[in-house]
Length: 183
Image (tube, rainbow, N blue to C red; front, side, top):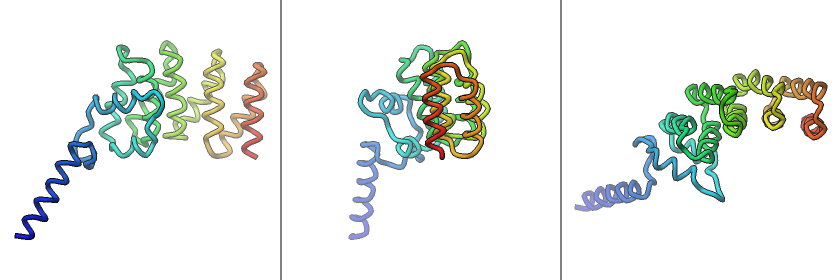
């Protein structure tokens, strides 16, 4: 009898936690609505750990939202940023495409560039290097930020090369600060 009560309480707890969204997220598919809710906060954005807690089932949903031209741009850019929390080949490939899409929205490109640098440094390095040569100063600024957050001597070398080529005074200042912070 005691065993039945314990099992009954455990099952009730699982059902209750599932109804609150506390159950193991890898056990159930992640819904678009759930992710839209997470992307829609105005004053907060889920941490990388919170995104990873959803499991890799979230990756295709985030890619779909980021590429949905009918979706709010805020959600699209946040979906791209959230992909940076995953070290997933599907997400990395999507971020590469978004970051290099010359006809795409500039804010989505910038968000994808930062997320790519977070998720896969090796794949990000050539994409960031290309962005440093962009005619768009905001994209170059984003590339500087991405490089400043990437570890290793390759990022330092790219920052130094960008400083030698950069004409924009504001970006030169940012490059100098990023190089100095690495010393």
